[in-house]
Amino acid sequence: MTPLLQVRNIEKRYGARIGCADVSFDLYPGEVLGIVGESGSGKSTLLNCLAGHLAPDQGEVIFDTRADGPRDVRQMPEAERRMLSRTDWAFVHQNPRDGLRMRVSAGGNVGERLMAVGARHYGDIRQTAGDWLTKVEIDTARMDDRPSAFSGGMQQRLQIARNLVTGPRLVFMDEPTGGLDVSVQARLLDLLRGLVRRMGLSAIIVTHDLAVVRLLADRLMVMKSGHVVETGLTDQVLDDPQHAYTQLLVSSVLQV
Amino acid sequence: MSYNFAYLDEQTKRMIRRAILKGVAIPGYQVPFASREMPMPYGWGTGGVQVSAACLTPDDVFKVIDQGADDTTNAVSIRRFFEKTAGVAVTEKTAEATVIQTRHRIPETPLCADQILVYQVPIPEPLRFLEPRETETRKMHGLEEYGLMHVKLYEDIARHGEIATAYAYPVKVEDRYVMDPSPIPKFDNPKLESPALQLFGAGREQRIYALPPFTKVASLDFEDYPFDPSKAAHPCALCGAEDSYLDEVIVDDAGGRMFVCSDTDYCASRRDTGEAA
Image 1 (cartoon, one colour):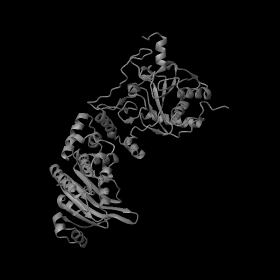
Image 2: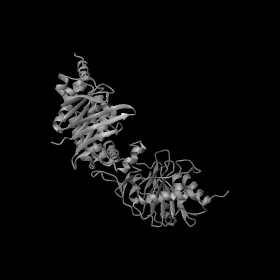
Image 3: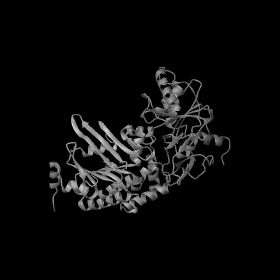
Image 4: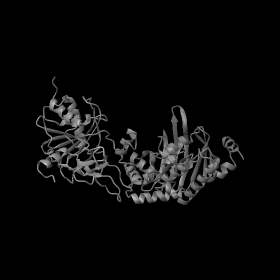
């Protein structure tokens, strides 16, 4: 099987400081990869390099495109890369305000991606948007409300609907549950797990919350100071951590 | 005190003509140009005046309209400006003019091939209110990413039940560039496909763009909500015209109102020839 995403020796430096370095991995279709580590360990830098928001200083990001098979995303023309990022890719921001248009109604937010790939039938767009709002448990009566009238959890669910509406194959998530209280977090995780499994999505999830990766991720990468210090199956890494930093991370989780 | 012909110096006019030629070569594309300070405030048509100055020749007959009218302050002062600085003949008759500078209207009388219509444009970027970053909007034009424009129309229908955008209605030019036709009523949009050369000048924003004669201009819409060039459902109270764009005029403080042609020349000529009902 061809990996959906092959990452080779990605490095990003901020001047003399290292953002992330020497990161390589393969992501297969339907697989969920978790990236954990403390603040400043280069998780978000790595994710932004992969998603094309930052230009890495070196390395390759090879994506298995529908039309032409595996291609290096960095070598693509910008038009193709942007097309990719609104069809086959999705990016869920930590803060829903970064990923939503706050002055556009919920329906318009979900419909934007459809219109960006050429949908021009209002009734169809609205129908699809309504279906997706239902899927993420937002009442369709709130369809014409602006996201600013939504709670934090609803905004995050709306952002997920907006991203998944074009049926992407790869989802990047940057702390999708950050800033939400625990009961809302639990529901969001439940929803995400259902959607990811049902749609057979591949996902890369950056988080510092070990419970999130325990629930969602098949495989885990632990980062420290810009380097990957340990990789493996999620249960294996969490239950039998080998690297000193991973041991510290696992033992730091509070037990209620 | 004497001026160079049409106020601007020859080098400036050359610079503006180059921008116009580039705009004509790429219909709908906003060409940056080094807009000059003009002896009038921004928002009064500094872009249109510079384009007119670059187009005028001593043999031209010049007409200026503001919201369709020849006799409003803005139209009168710009017309007088070129009478003084270029010494060109001026007229109020659409058919007699060779260069027409307009603000917010296209004349009702169909234009012909030897005429130039110059628009005054306040904000040339149709995506501005959706995407505030200029770097991003330029990229969107370059990569033909116009989905966002439809989000605006979607929002209109979701909120008002129809596309409520009534002026500055976005159009797609030759299936390529999305363009702001300046704040003309959407009633005028079908007239953008014209035998005349149409030039758009935005002075403060320093952009010129153009529609060469017979360019394909399509107003954006949805399949199930097609474009509708609507107008007030009345005949003109003065000349009885049913096919012209109307202004609503309040005539007393008891709620009395009348609808009259916004194109004063069209209305007056109909009344002169006795076509009024």
